Image (cartoon, rainbow, N blue to C red; front, side, top):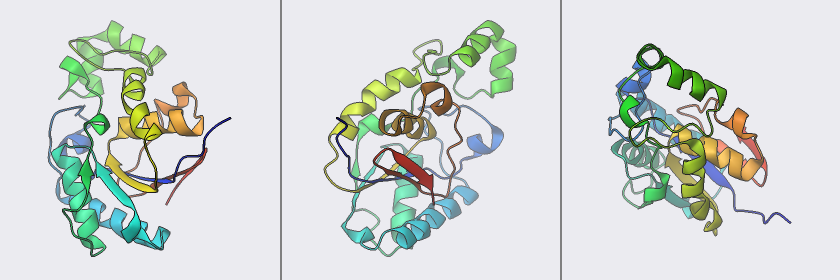
Length: 197
């Protein structure tokens, strides 16, 4: 029997210059760019339109600068104290190891065999030099999901959202590893269903 979790309103951090350039950020702390700041505010407006009692939700973010700024700008846009949220280290993005800072084109050129291995199994592939797979990330965040006791706004990263979808909604690991996670929108996860708002 699957235990029903409280609803999650997932917001990916706004755009950074590295996102715009297609660079792998992972655990590098890259700040939001001008578009990313607007996207953070847009996500707040979307959240306010979705949830009647948005003030009563739990708010938690990854501790990285880009997620914290997204949370604070989002909260400010809906007239909440921007500082009243909590951080959880388990929500930090997966690391791409020595590939961080590279584009996929650069990775394929520098390490064609490893890039091909990743394409065959994105969920389980571990990037070189201390990288982390989606499977490892899912193991890290499962206790966070299991500990949710009320409806929660989560501001985190694309990899975290993909792991959430696999763990909570039954999305196949192959599909989850490749699914687009939008910035400036809200991914609503209710039971085993999910949709974008």
